[in-house]
Length: 293
Image (cartoon, rainbow, N blue to C red; front, top):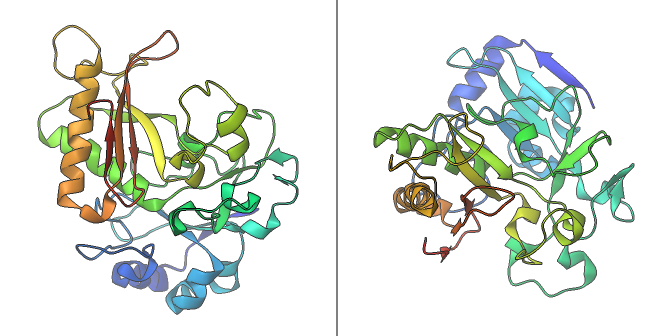
């Protein structure tokens, strides 16, 4: 996969400035969704062949590259920041649970299991992540590498499923905390995308659902990271516990009230010997709460 820099500035700037809901995922929206998302902080959009066929401006912007896997970066988007369009590897490229040497496994729908909705179907495609592009920004505070499955450390390229709406929601949660005066430097993604194989067998599997939203790229387990490698003491009581996680969960709840199109799961998890407290946040499309969230 190529990581190409484009400097076709006039066309790029015009297309980026004018684009609104045209490149947003197919979901009901409460307000226009620009390329920067509701947060204004998205720095990438994921481009499937279906998207480029439906929205011709992407083909005009990217040319023949619009239908190919790869990271295509406009150096000077509006605001002076780079913006990337990332072409997806089609789902059909997966063979026997792998793409090349990278083991992925099988989604429930592939195994003939009845799924409750389209949200539990097979992904459209995969982002191909390499050592060269892993640090590509998908938003102001997040990069591709933040969401990779934690396995097969020496295997490249890796393959990632990621929903732009999740990244947008995380940015909004961070902004909400800061607006309320909390010291929140960034959100650390403890677990983002999990391949079906890893979800079933890798790491600490206790409590994982076989239909976990992590397999669909629209969920992340996060904590507020201020440099200590664990959840920050947000309430400043001298302890790090679920009361701090609850503050993060409340921010996610406020974001959902402001943006009902980003509805999803919010769950609070206690600390154990392996990690501190954290919060699960997803954009499954329906409200779900657990762990006193």
